[in-house]
Length: 611
Ligand code: SF4
Image (tube, rainbow, N blue to C red; front, top):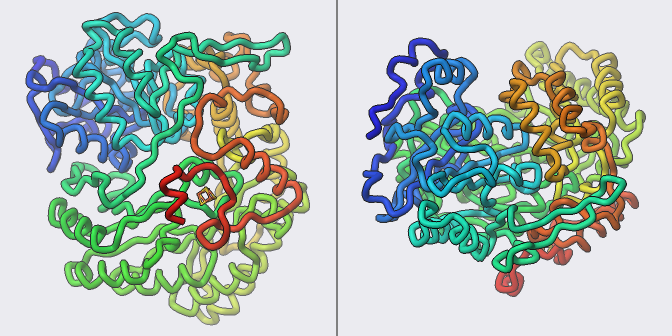
Protein backbone atom coordinates (compact mmCIF):
# COMPACT_ATOMS: atom_id res chain seq x y z
CA UNK A 1 0.00 0.00 0.00
CA UNK A 2 2.75 2.44 0.94
CA UNK A 3 5.66 1.05 -1.08
CA UNK A 4 7.51 0.65 2.20
CA UNK A 5 8.74 -2.76 3.30
CA UNK A 6 11.53 -4.52 5.15
CA UNK A 7 12.91 -6.41 2.13
CA UNK A 8 16.35 -4.80 2.17
CA UNK A 9 16.73 -5.16 5.94
CA UNK A 10 15.82 -8.74 6.71
CA UNK A 11 19.24 -10.20 5.82
CA UNK A 12 20.78 -8.02 8.53
CA UNK A 13 18.75 -9.35 11.46
CA UNK A 14 18.36 -12.52 13.50
CA UNK A 15 15.04 -14.34 13.08
CA UNK A 16 13.73 -12.43 10.06
CA UNK A 17 10.51 -14.48 10.30
CA UNK A 18 9.53 -12.11 13.10
CA UNK A 19 8.88 -9.42 10.51
CA UNK A 20 7.25 -11.34 7.66
CA UNK A 21 3.72 -11.01 6.43
CA UNK A 22 0.95 -13.38 5.35
CA UNK A 23 1.07 -16.23 7.83
CA UNK A 24 -1.67 -18.86 7.50
CA UNK A 25 -5.02 -17.38 8.66
CA UNK A 26 -3.72 -13.78 8.78
CA UNK A 27 -6.25 -11.32 7.39
CA UNK A 28 -5.73 -8.59 4.83
CA UNK A 29 -8.56 -6.11 4.47
CA UNK A 30 -8.47 -3.02 2.31
CA UNK A 31 -7.49 -0.01 4.49
CA UNK A 32 -9.33 2.34 2.14
CA UNK A 33 -12.63 0.63 2.99
CA UNK A 34 -12.23 0.68 6.79
CA UNK A 35 -14.13 3.25 8.83
CA UNK A 36 -11.75 2.63 11.76
CA UNK A 37 -8.37 0.95 11.39
CA UNK A 38 -6.38 -0.38 14.32
CA UNK A 39 -2.77 -1.45 14.57
CA UNK A 40 -2.69 -3.92 17.45
CA UNK A 41 0.74 -3.76 19.02
CA UNK A 42 2.51 -6.05 21.42
CA UNK A 43 5.62 -4.47 22.97
CA UNK A 44 7.74 -7.60 22.95
CA UNK A 45 9.08 -9.86 20.20
CA UNK A 46 6.75 -11.62 17.78
CA UNK A 47 7.15 -15.06 19.44
CA UNK A 48 5.94 -13.69 22.76
CA UNK A 49 3.19 -11.47 21.35
CA UNK A 50 1.72 -14.14 19.10
CA UNK A 51 1.30 -16.38 22.14
CA UNK A 52 -1.07 -13.91 23.74
CA UNK A 53 -4.68 -14.97 23.34
CA UNK A 54 -6.05 -11.49 24.11
CA UNK A 55 -4.30 -10.04 21.07
CA UNK A 56 -5.68 -12.79 18.84
CA UNK A 57 -9.20 -12.25 20.17
CA UNK A 58 -9.17 -8.50 19.45
CA UNK A 59 -7.67 -9.09 15.99
CA UNK A 60 -10.56 -11.33 15.04
CA UNK A 61 -13.30 -9.22 16.65
CA UNK A 62 -12.25 -6.15 14.68
CA UNK A 63 -11.63 -7.94 11.41
CA UNK A 64 -14.93 -9.84 11.66
CA UNK A 65 -16.74 -6.48 11.58
CA UNK A 66 -17.36 -5.21 8.04
CA UNK A 67 -16.42 -1.61 8.90
CA UNK A 68 -13.25 -2.16 10.90
CA UNK A 69 -9.78 -3.47 10.29
CA UNK A 70 -6.97 -4.70 12.52
CA UNK A 71 -3.34 -5.36 11.71
CA UNK A 72 -0.39 -6.30 13.96
CA UNK A 73 3.02 -4.96 14.98
CA UNK A 74 5.57 -6.25 17.49
CA UNK A 75 8.61 -4.70 19.14
CA UNK A 76 11.66 -4.98 16.90
CA UNK A 77 14.61 -6.72 18.52
CA UNK A 78 17.54 -4.25 18.92
CA UNK A 79 19.21 -5.50 15.71
CA UNK A 80 16.06 -4.66 13.76
CA UNK A 81 15.64 -1.34 15.56
CA UNK A 82 19.15 -0.41 14.52
CA UNK A 83 18.50 -1.51 10.92
CA UNK A 84 15.28 0.53 10.79
CA UNK A 85 16.94 3.65 12.18
CA UNK A 86 19.93 3.37 9.83
CA UNK A 87 17.65 2.95 6.81
CA UNK A 88 15.19 5.63 7.94
CA UNK A 89 12.39 3.06 7.62
CA UNK A 90 9.48 3.38 10.06
CA UNK A 91 8.02 0.50 12.05
CA UNK A 92 5.38 -1.05 9.79
CA UNK A 93 2.31 -3.14 10.43
CA UNK A 94 2.78 -6.72 9.26
CA UNK A 95 -0.30 -6.90 7.03
CA UNK A 96 -0.37 -3.79 4.84
CA UNK A 97 3.17 -2.59 5.67
CA UNK A 98 1.96 0.83 6.77
CA UNK A 99 3.76 2.96 9.40
CA UNK A 100 1.99 2.87 12.76
CA UNK A 101 1.43 6.62 12.51
CA UNK A 102 -0.99 6.12 9.60
CA UNK A 103 -3.57 4.20 11.62
CA UNK A 104 -6.52 5.81 13.40
CA UNK A 105 -5.82 3.76 16.54
CA UNK A 106 -2.63 2.17 17.82
CA UNK A 107 -3.56 -0.25 20.59
CA UNK A 108 -1.06 -1.88 22.94
CA UNK A 109 -1.59 -5.09 24.85
CA UNK A 110 0.46 -4.78 28.04
CA UNK A 111 1.20 -8.08 29.72
CA UNK A 112 3.26 -6.42 32.41
CA UNK A 113 5.27 -3.37 33.36
CA UNK A 114 8.65 -4.38 31.99
CA UNK A 115 7.47 -3.84 28.42
CA UNK A 116 6.97 -0.08 28.86
CA UNK A 117 10.26 0.98 27.24
CA UNK A 118 9.39 -1.11 24.18
CA UNK A 119 6.10 0.76 23.92
CA UNK A 120 8.09 4.00 23.57
CA UNK A 121 10.34 2.40 20.94
CA UNK A 122 7.33 1.34 18.89
CA UNK A 123 5.71 4.79 19.07
CA UNK A 124 8.97 6.48 18.12
CA UNK A 125 9.74 4.15 15.22
CA UNK A 126 6.12 4.33 14.13
CA UNK A 127 6.38 8.11 13.69
CA UNK A 128 4.03 8.96 16.57
CA UNK A 129 4.92 11.68 19.13
CA UNK A 130 5.66 9.97 22.45
CA UNK A 131 3.62 12.32 24.60
CA UNK A 132 -0.15 12.35 24.17
CA UNK A 133 -0.18 16.14 24.61
CA UNK A 134 2.16 16.57 21.62
CA UNK A 135 0.00 14.57 19.19
CA UNK A 136 -1.66 16.40 16.33
CA UNK A 137 -5.05 15.75 14.72
CA UNK A 138 -3.34 13.58 12.11
CA UNK A 139 -1.78 11.27 14.70
CA UNK A 140 -3.40 8.05 15.91
CA UNK A 141 -5.14 7.64 19.22
CA UNK A 142 -2.83 5.52 21.40
CA UNK A 143 -4.70 3.07 23.64
CA UNK A 144 -3.49 0.35 26.00
CA UNK A 145 -5.05 -2.44 28.01
CA UNK A 146 -4.21 -5.75 29.62
CA UNK A 147 -2.80 -6.77 33.00
CA UNK A 148 0.17 -4.40 32.62
CA UNK A 149 -2.27 -1.50 32.55
CA UNK A 150 -3.91 -2.35 35.89
CA UNK A 151 -2.07 0.70 37.22
CA UNK A 152 -1.44 2.72 34.06
CA UNK A 153 -0.41 5.91 35.90
CA UNK A 154 3.31 5.73 34.98
CA UNK A 155 2.17 5.74 31.31
CA UNK A 156 -0.35 8.56 31.76
CA UNK A 157 1.70 11.03 29.66
CA UNK A 158 2.01 8.58 26.75
CA UNK A 159 -1.47 7.09 26.45
CA UNK A 160 -4.57 8.78 25.08
CA UNK A 161 -6.83 6.15 26.61
CA UNK A 162 -6.72 2.96 28.66
CA UNK A 163 -9.17 0.08 28.44
CA UNK A 164 -9.88 -1.39 31.88
CA UNK A 165 -10.72 -5.07 32.10
CA UNK A 166 -11.93 -7.41 29.38
CA UNK A 167 -12.14 -5.64 26.03
CA UNK A 168 -14.32 -7.88 23.84
CA UNK A 169 -17.25 -5.46 24.05
CA UNK A 170 -15.51 -2.15 24.64
CA UNK A 171 -13.22 -2.54 21.60
CA UNK A 172 -16.25 -2.36 19.31
CA UNK A 173 -17.63 0.64 21.19
CA UNK A 174 -14.25 2.35 20.77
CA UNK A 175 -14.18 1.48 17.08
CA UNK A 176 -17.68 2.92 16.64
CA UNK A 177 -16.58 6.16 18.35
CA UNK A 178 -13.48 6.38 16.13
CA UNK A 179 -15.60 5.79 13.02
CA UNK A 180 -18.01 8.54 14.09
CA UNK A 181 -15.38 11.03 15.25
CA UNK A 182 -12.10 10.25 13.42
CA UNK A 183 -9.10 11.74 15.28
CA UNK A 184 -8.22 13.74 12.15
CA UNK A 185 -11.51 15.64 12.51
CA UNK A 186 -11.18 16.58 16.18
CA UNK A 187 -9.09 14.71 18.67
CA UNK A 188 -10.60 16.36 21.73
CA UNK A 189 -14.13 15.48 20.65
CA UNK A 190 -13.11 11.84 20.17
CA UNK A 191 -11.34 11.67 23.54
CA UNK A 192 -14.43 13.06 25.27
CA UNK A 193 -16.54 10.45 23.53
CA UNK A 194 -14.10 7.69 24.58
CA UNK A 195 -14.16 8.88 28.21
CA UNK A 196 -17.91 8.24 28.25
CA UNK A 197 -17.55 4.59 27.24
CA UNK A 198 -17.75 2.44 30.40
CA UNK A 199 -14.32 1.04 31.24
CA UNK A 200 -12.36 3.59 29.18
CA UNK A 201 -9.99 5.90 31.04
CA UNK A 202 -8.57 9.06 29.48
CA UNK A 203 -5.61 10.04 31.72
CA UNK A 204 -5.42 13.64 30.44
CA UNK A 205 -8.90 14.26 31.86
CA UNK A 206 -7.63 13.79 35.43
CA UNK A 207 -5.44 16.17 37.40
CA UNK A 208 -2.99 15.01 40.00
CA UNK A 209 -1.47 16.83 42.98
CA UNK A 210 1.18 15.76 45.51
CA UNK A 211 1.80 16.94 49.06
CA UNK A 212 5.10 18.31 50.36
CA UNK A 213 6.21 14.80 51.40
CA UNK A 214 5.85 13.59 47.83
CA UNK A 215 2.69 11.60 48.50
CA UNK A 216 -0.30 11.68 46.21
CA UNK A 217 -2.75 14.26 47.53
CA UNK A 218 -5.42 14.33 44.85
CA UNK A 219 -6.50 12.78 41.58
CA UNK A 220 -9.75 14.10 40.15
CA UNK A 221 -11.46 14.73 36.82
CA UNK A 222 -10.80 18.03 35.05
CA UNK A 223 -13.23 17.44 32.19
CA UNK A 224 -17.03 17.04 32.54
CA UNK A 225 -16.91 14.02 30.20
CA UNK A 226 -14.75 12.08 32.67
CA UNK A 227 -16.33 10.09 35.53
CA UNK A 228 -14.95 10.16 39.09
CA UNK A 229 -14.27 6.43 38.95
CA UNK A 230 -13.88 4.10 36.02
CA UNK A 231 -15.09 0.53 36.51
CA UNK A 232 -13.45 -2.27 34.57
CA UNK A 233 -15.45 -4.22 31.99
CA UNK A 234 -16.31 -7.85 32.41
CA UNK A 235 -17.71 -10.45 30.03
CA UNK A 236 -20.57 -12.15 31.83
CA UNK A 237 -21.18 -15.06 29.45
CA UNK A 238 -18.08 -16.69 27.97
CA UNK A 239 -20.17 -18.96 25.72
CA UNK A 240 -21.29 -15.99 23.67
CA UNK A 241 -17.91 -14.22 23.82
CA UNK A 242 -15.96 -14.33 20.56
CA UNK A 243 -13.25 -16.95 20.28
CA UNK A 244 -10.81 -16.93 17.35
CA UNK A 245 -11.14 -20.32 15.69
CA UNK A 246 -9.03 -19.43 12.67
CA UNK A 247 -5.92 -18.67 14.70
CA UNK A 248 -2.88 -17.37 12.85
CA UNK A 249 -0.16 -20.03 12.44
CA UNK A 250 3.27 -18.38 12.77
CA UNK A 251 6.26 -19.25 10.59
CA UNK A 252 8.56 -19.59 13.57
CA UNK A 253 8.22 -21.34 16.88
CA UNK A 254 6.41 -19.19 19.41
CA UNK A 255 6.27 -19.44 23.19
CA UNK A 256 2.94 -21.28 23.02
CA UNK A 257 2.91 -23.16 19.74
CA UNK A 258 -0.47 -24.75 20.25
CA UNK A 259 -4.21 -24.22 20.22
CA UNK A 260 -5.01 -22.11 23.25
CA UNK A 261 -8.52 -23.05 24.35
CA UNK A 262 -9.79 -20.65 26.96
CA UNK A 263 -11.95 -22.74 29.26
CA UNK A 264 -12.51 -20.24 32.05
CA UNK A 265 -11.68 -16.79 33.40
CA UNK A 266 -11.13 -15.63 36.93
CA UNK A 267 -10.01 -17.37 40.08
CA UNK A 268 -11.51 -17.07 43.54
CA UNK A 269 -8.88 -19.01 45.49
CA UNK A 270 -7.85 -15.57 46.82
CA UNK A 271 -4.05 -15.86 46.98
CA UNK A 272 -3.32 -12.46 48.47
CA UNK A 273 -0.34 -11.61 46.26
CA UNK A 274 -2.07 -12.41 42.96
CA UNK A 275 -3.26 -9.46 40.89
CA UNK A 276 -4.93 -11.54 38.18
CA UNK A 277 -6.75 -13.51 40.88
CA UNK A 278 -8.28 -10.26 42.12
CA UNK A 279 -8.88 -8.30 38.92
CA UNK A 280 -10.44 -11.09 36.83
CA UNK A 281 -13.02 -12.14 39.44
CA UNK A 282 -15.54 -13.78 39.44
CA UNK A 283 -14.99 -17.21 37.89
CA UNK A 284 -16.72 -17.77 34.59
CA UNK A 285 -16.66 -20.97 32.52
CA UNK A 286 -17.38 -21.91 28.93
CA UNK A 287 -19.74 -24.84 28.58
CA UNK A 288 -18.31 -28.21 27.55
CA UNK A 289 -20.21 -28.54 24.22
CA UNK A 290 -19.00 -25.07 23.17
CA UNK A 291 -15.40 -25.93 24.12
CA UNK A 292 -15.44 -29.25 22.25
CA UNK A 293 -16.74 -27.50 19.15
CA UNK A 294 -14.18 -24.69 19.40
CA UNK A 295 -11.33 -27.17 19.86
CA UNK A 296 -12.42 -29.22 16.86
CA UNK A 297 -12.78 -26.18 14.62
CA UNK A 298 -9.45 -24.67 15.73
CA UNK A 299 -7.47 -27.87 15.20
CA UNK A 300 -9.03 -28.18 11.74
CA UNK A 301 -8.21 -24.54 10.89
CA UNK A 302 -4.62 -24.57 12.14
CA UNK A 303 -3.25 -28.12 11.98
CA UNK A 304 -1.71 -27.63 15.43
CA UNK A 305 -0.96 -30.79 17.41
CA UNK A 306 -1.51 -29.68 20.97
CA UNK A 307 -4.47 -28.11 22.76
CA UNK A 308 -3.67 -26.18 25.89
CA UNK A 309 -6.57 -25.54 28.27
CA UNK A 310 -6.26 -21.95 29.41
CA UNK A 311 -7.60 -20.89 32.78
CA UNK A 312 -6.08 -19.48 35.94
CA UNK A 313 -6.06 -22.96 37.36
CA UNK A 314 -7.58 -25.26 34.81
CA UNK A 315 -8.22 -28.25 37.14
CA UNK A 316 -10.68 -25.93 38.93
CA UNK A 317 -12.97 -26.10 35.88
CA UNK A 318 -16.24 -27.76 36.96
CA UNK A 319 -16.50 -30.89 34.82
CA UNK A 320 -12.82 -30.95 33.89
CA UNK A 321 -12.75 -34.77 33.65
CA UNK A 322 -15.69 -34.81 31.26
CA UNK A 323 -14.02 -32.11 29.18
CA UNK A 324 -10.74 -34.03 28.99
CA UNK A 325 -12.52 -37.26 28.07
CA UNK A 326 -14.40 -35.42 25.31
CA UNK A 327 -11.24 -33.85 23.92
CA UNK A 328 -9.31 -37.13 24.01
CA UNK A 329 -12.17 -38.98 22.32
CA UNK A 330 -12.12 -36.46 19.46
CA UNK A 331 -8.40 -35.81 19.11
CA UNK A 332 -6.27 -38.60 20.62
CA UNK A 333 -6.35 -40.65 17.40
CA UNK A 334 -5.10 -37.63 15.46
CA UNK A 335 -2.05 -37.52 17.76
CA UNK A 336 -3.23 -34.21 19.22
CA UNK A 337 -2.19 -33.93 22.87
CA UNK A 338 -3.97 -32.00 25.58
CA UNK A 339 -2.07 -29.83 28.07
CA UNK A 340 -3.58 -28.70 31.34
CA UNK A 341 -1.32 -26.04 32.85
CA UNK A 342 -1.77 -26.20 36.58
CA UNK A 343 -0.08 -25.02 39.69
CA UNK A 344 -2.43 -26.90 42.00
CA UNK A 345 -0.63 -28.87 44.65
CA UNK A 346 -2.86 -31.92 44.96
CA UNK A 347 -3.44 -35.46 43.81
CA UNK A 348 -6.46 -34.45 41.72
CA UNK A 349 -4.25 -32.59 39.26
CA UNK A 350 -1.95 -35.64 39.09
CA UNK A 351 -4.95 -37.86 38.31
CA UNK A 352 -5.88 -35.50 35.48
CA UNK A 353 -2.29 -35.51 34.20
CA UNK A 354 -2.43 -39.32 34.11
CA UNK A 355 -5.44 -39.17 31.80
CA UNK A 356 -3.62 -36.74 29.50
CA UNK A 357 -0.56 -39.02 29.36
CA UNK A 358 -2.54 -41.30 27.01
CA UNK A 359 -1.17 -39.15 24.17
CA UNK A 360 1.85 -37.35 25.66
CA UNK A 361 3.06 -37.12 29.26
CA UNK A 362 2.65 -33.51 30.42
CA UNK A 363 5.05 -31.74 32.77
CA UNK A 364 3.91 -31.33 36.37
CA UNK A 365 4.10 -28.03 38.21
CA UNK A 366 3.39 -27.42 41.87
CA UNK A 367 3.33 -23.99 43.49
CA UNK A 368 3.53 -24.12 47.28
CA UNK A 369 4.87 -20.50 47.06
CA UNK A 370 6.11 -20.49 50.68
CA UNK A 371 8.15 -22.97 52.70
CA UNK A 372 6.39 -22.67 56.05
CA UNK A 373 2.76 -23.37 56.86
CA UNK A 374 2.61 -20.04 58.73
CA UNK A 375 3.54 -18.05 55.63
CA UNK A 376 1.26 -20.07 53.37
CA UNK A 377 -1.58 -19.03 55.66
CA UNK A 378 -0.50 -15.38 55.45
CA UNK A 379 -0.73 -15.49 51.65
CA UNK A 380 -3.90 -17.65 51.74
CA UNK A 381 -2.29 -20.53 49.86
CA UNK A 382 -4.42 -23.36 51.13
CA UNK A 383 -2.04 -26.28 50.77
CA UNK A 384 -0.12 -28.29 53.34
CA UNK A 385 3.12 -30.25 53.13
CA UNK A 386 1.06 -33.42 53.14
CA UNK A 387 -0.87 -32.23 50.05
CA UNK A 388 2.43 -31.77 48.27
CA UNK A 389 3.92 -35.09 49.40
CA UNK A 390 0.87 -37.11 48.43
CA UNK A 391 0.64 -35.37 45.03
CA UNK A 392 4.29 -36.13 44.33
CA UNK A 393 3.92 -39.73 45.54
CA UNK A 394 0.98 -40.20 43.16
CA UNK A 395 3.00 -38.70 40.33
CA UNK A 396 6.08 -40.85 40.90
CA UNK A 397 3.96 -43.99 41.27
CA UNK A 398 2.49 -43.21 37.85
CA UNK A 399 5.77 -42.86 35.99
CA UNK A 400 6.81 -39.21 36.44
CA UNK A 401 10.41 -38.60 37.40
CA UNK A 402 10.51 -34.81 37.25
CA UNK A 403 8.48 -31.83 38.46
CA UNK A 404 8.67 -28.05 38.71
CA UNK A 405 8.20 -26.27 42.01
CA UNK A 406 7.54 -22.54 42.44
CA UNK A 407 8.39 -20.50 45.53
CA UNK A 408 8.50 -16.79 46.28
CA UNK A 409 10.72 -14.86 48.67
CA UNK A 410 10.17 -11.42 50.19
CA UNK A 411 6.49 -12.05 50.99
CA UNK A 412 4.94 -9.84 53.69
CA UNK A 413 5.93 -10.91 57.23
CA UNK A 414 8.55 -13.37 55.89
CA UNK A 415 11.46 -14.13 58.24
CA UNK A 416 14.73 -15.97 57.65
CA UNK A 417 13.10 -19.01 59.30
CA UNK A 418 10.45 -18.99 56.56
CA UNK A 419 13.19 -18.93 53.93
CA UNK A 420 14.98 -21.75 55.74
CA UNK A 421 11.69 -23.66 55.64
CA UNK A 422 11.92 -23.71 51.82
CA UNK A 423 15.20 -25.61 52.11
CA UNK A 424 13.75 -27.99 54.69
CA UNK A 425 10.68 -28.64 52.56
CA UNK A 426 12.84 -29.35 49.51
CA UNK A 427 15.00 -31.77 51.50
CA UNK A 428 11.88 -33.68 52.57
CA UNK A 429 10.52 -33.64 49.02
CA UNK A 430 13.73 -35.08 47.61
CA UNK A 431 14.10 -37.75 50.27
CA UNK A 432 10.48 -38.92 49.83
CA UNK A 433 10.86 -38.87 46.04
CA UNK A 434 14.03 -41.00 46.23
CA UNK A 435 12.14 -43.53 48.34
CA UNK A 436 9.13 -43.58 45.98
CA UNK A 437 11.23 -43.95 42.85
CA UNK A 438 13.42 -46.78 44.13
CA UNK A 439 15.63 -47.99 41.27
CA UNK A 440 14.47 -45.07 39.08
CA UNK A 441 15.86 -42.53 41.55
CA UNK A 442 18.81 -41.72 39.30
CA UNK A 443 16.42 -40.03 36.89
CA UNK A 444 14.83 -37.77 39.51
CA UNK A 445 14.83 -34.06 38.62
CA UNK A 446 13.25 -31.01 40.26
CA UNK A 447 13.32 -27.55 38.69
CA UNK A 448 12.82 -25.11 41.54
CA UNK A 449 12.08 -21.51 40.68
CA UNK A 450 12.47 -18.77 43.30
CA UNK A 451 10.59 -15.58 42.45
CA UNK A 452 10.81 -12.25 44.25
CA UNK A 453 7.57 -10.87 45.64
CA UNK A 454 6.37 -7.81 43.71
CA UNK A 455 3.50 -5.94 45.39
CA UNK A 456 0.74 -5.23 42.89
CA UNK A 457 -2.11 -2.73 42.71
CA UNK A 458 -5.64 -4.03 43.46
CA UNK A 459 -4.40 -6.81 45.77
CA UNK A 460 -4.51 -7.15 49.57
CA UNK A 461 -0.71 -6.71 49.53
CA UNK A 462 -0.83 -3.42 47.59
CA UNK A 463 0.07 -1.47 50.74
CA UNK A 464 3.31 -3.39 51.40
CA UNK A 465 6.62 -2.24 49.94
CA UNK A 466 8.99 -4.68 48.28
CA UNK A 467 11.93 -5.81 50.40
CA UNK A 468 15.17 -3.99 49.76
CA UNK A 469 17.50 -5.42 47.14
CA UNK A 470 20.03 -6.23 49.87
CA UNK A 471 17.49 -8.32 51.80
CA UNK A 472 16.29 -10.12 48.68
CA UNK A 473 19.86 -10.86 47.62
CA UNK A 474 20.68 -12.17 51.11
CA UNK A 475 17.68 -14.52 50.96
CA UNK A 476 18.63 -15.73 47.49
CA UNK A 477 22.20 -16.36 48.69
CA UNK A 478 20.89 -18.30 51.68
CA UNK A 479 18.89 -20.60 49.42
CA UNK A 480 21.71 -21.03 46.90
CA UNK A 481 24.02 -22.05 49.74
CA UNK A 482 21.61 -24.31 51.58
CA UNK A 483 19.81 -26.19 48.79
CA UNK A 484 22.37 -28.90 48.09
CA UNK A 485 20.51 -31.90 46.64
CA UNK A 486 21.95 -32.80 43.23
CA UNK A 487 18.44 -33.57 41.91
CA UNK A 488 17.44 -29.91 42.29
CA UNK A 489 18.10 -27.27 39.68
CA UNK A 490 17.54 -23.91 41.33
CA UNK A 491 16.73 -20.77 39.36
CA UNK A 492 15.88 -17.30 40.59
CA UNK A 493 14.75 -13.93 39.27
CA UNK A 494 17.10 -11.00 38.96
CA UNK A 495 16.53 -8.72 41.94
CA UNK A 496 16.90 -5.56 39.83
CA UNK A 497 14.22 -6.77 37.43
CA UNK A 498 11.75 -7.38 40.25
CA UNK A 499 12.67 -4.02 41.75
CA UNK A 500 11.86 -2.26 38.49
CA UNK A 501 8.57 -4.10 38.22
CA UNK A 502 7.75 -3.14 41.83
CA UNK A 503 8.45 0.55 41.18
CA UNK A 504 6.17 0.68 38.14
CA UNK A 505 3.40 -1.60 39.38
CA UNK A 506 2.53 0.84 42.21
CA UNK A 507 3.97 4.02 40.71
CA UNK A 508 2.43 7.37 39.87
CA UNK A 509 2.62 9.72 36.91
CA UNK A 510 6.01 11.12 37.91
CA UNK A 511 7.58 7.84 36.80
CA UNK A 512 6.84 8.76 33.19
CA UNK A 513 9.95 10.94 33.19
CA UNK A 514 12.19 8.15 34.56
CA UNK A 515 10.78 5.88 31.87
CA UNK A 516 11.63 8.41 29.18
CA UNK A 517 15.14 8.96 30.53
CA UNK A 518 15.83 5.22 30.65
CA UNK A 519 14.48 4.70 27.14
CA UNK A 520 16.55 7.64 25.84
CA UNK A 521 19.60 6.10 27.50
CA UNK A 522 18.99 2.83 25.65
CA UNK A 523 16.77 0.70 27.94
CA UNK A 524 14.96 -1.95 25.88
CA UNK A 525 13.43 -5.37 26.60
CA UNK A 526 13.76 -4.94 30.37
CA UNK A 527 12.10 -8.30 31.03
CA UNK A 528 14.90 -10.11 29.20
CA UNK A 529 17.78 -10.97 31.56
CA UNK A 530 20.36 -10.33 28.86
CA UNK A 531 18.91 -6.88 28.05
CA UNK A 532 18.15 -5.38 31.46
CA UNK A 533 20.62 -2.62 32.31
CA UNK A 534 20.07 -1.54 35.93
CA UNK A 535 22.75 1.16 35.68
CA UNK A 536 20.66 2.94 33.01
CA UNK A 537 17.68 2.90 35.34
CA UNK A 538 19.72 4.25 38.26
CA UNK A 539 20.75 7.16 36.06
CA UNK A 540 17.23 7.63 34.71
CA UNK A 541 15.64 7.84 38.16
CA UNK A 542 18.32 10.34 39.22
CA UNK A 543 17.85 12.43 36.05
CA UNK A 544 14.11 12.54 36.73
CA UNK A 545 14.77 13.64 40.32
CA UNK A 546 13.22 10.42 41.65
CA UNK A 547 14.31 7.66 43.98
CA UNK A 548 13.94 4.10 42.66
CA UNK A 549 13.94 2.76 46.23
CA UNK A 550 11.13 5.13 47.25
CA UNK A 551 8.90 3.67 44.55
CA UNK A 552 9.88 0.01 44.98
CA UNK A 553 10.22 -0.27 48.75
CA UNK A 554 7.81 2.20 50.31
CA UNK A 555 4.80 0.91 52.17
CA UNK A 556 1.58 2.88 51.90
CA UNK A 557 -0.50 3.76 54.95
CA UNK A 558 -4.06 2.51 54.74
CA UNK A 559 -5.14 6.15 54.78
CA UNK A 560 -2.85 7.13 51.86
CA UNK A 561 -4.37 7.97 48.51
CA UNK A 562 -3.20 5.37 46.03
CA UNK A 563 -2.32 6.37 42.44
CA UNK A 564 -4.84 3.84 41.03
CA UNK A 565 -7.71 4.53 43.41
CA UNK A 566 -9.89 6.08 40.71
CA UNK A 567 -9.70 2.82 38.75
CA UNK A 568 -12.21 0.27 39.96
CA UNK A 569 -11.19 -3.30 39.11
CA UNK A 570 -14.16 -4.86 40.88
CA UNK A 571 -12.72 -5.81 44.26
CA UNK A 572 -13.55 -3.15 46.85
CA UNK A 573 -11.05 -1.37 49.08
CA UNK A 574 -12.97 -2.68 52.12
CA UNK A 575 -12.45 -6.28 50.94
CA UNK A 576 -8.74 -5.70 50.29
CA UNK A 577 -8.32 -4.16 53.74
CA UNK A 578 -10.13 -7.13 55.34
CA UNK A 579 -7.83 -9.49 53.47
CA UNK A 580 -4.74 -7.50 54.52
CA UNK A 581 -5.83 -7.80 58.15
CA UNK A 582 -6.57 -11.52 57.72
CA UNK A 583 -3.05 -11.98 56.30
CA UNK A 584 -1.50 -10.50 59.42
CA UNK A 585 -3.71 -12.68 61.59
CA UNK A 586 -2.85 -15.77 59.51
CA UNK A 587 -6.55 -16.33 58.78
CA UNK A 588 -7.67 -18.18 55.69
CA UNK A 589 -10.39 -16.95 53.34
CA UNK A 590 -12.20 -19.81 51.60
CA UNK A 591 -12.78 -19.98 47.87
CA UNK A 592 -16.21 -18.44 47.35
CA UNK A 593 -17.05 -21.13 44.79
CA UNK A 594 -16.91 -23.69 47.57
CA UNK A 595 -18.35 -21.69 50.43
CA UNK A 596 -19.82 -18.34 51.24
CA UNK A 597 -19.40 -15.14 49.29
CA UNK A 598 -16.73 -12.94 50.90
CA UNK A 599 -18.43 -9.89 49.43
CA UNK A 600 -15.37 -8.84 47.45
CA UNK A 601 -17.40 -6.57 45.20
CA UNK A 602 -16.42 -8.21 41.90
CA UNK A 603 -19.76 -9.73 40.95
CA UNK A 604 -22.04 -7.49 38.96
CA UNK A 605 -25.54 -7.49 40.51
CA UNK A 606 -26.96 -9.89 37.89
CA UNK A 607 -24.13 -12.36 38.46
CA UNK A 608 -24.42 -12.24 42.23
CA UNK A 609 -28.09 -13.30 41.96
CA UNK A 610 -27.02 -16.44 40.12
CA UNK A 611 -24.90 -17.60 43.07
S1 SF4 B 1 -18.66 -11.09 45.07
FE1 SF4 B 1 -18.67 -12.97 46.33
S2 SF4 B 1 -19.21 -14.60 44.87
FE2 SF4 B 1 -18.54 -12.82 43.64
S3 SF4 B 1 -16.33 -13.17 43.31
FE3 SF4 B 1 -16.53 -11.86 45.12
S4 SF4 B 1 -16.49 -13.30 46.87
FE4 SF4 B 1 -16.94 -14.50 45.02
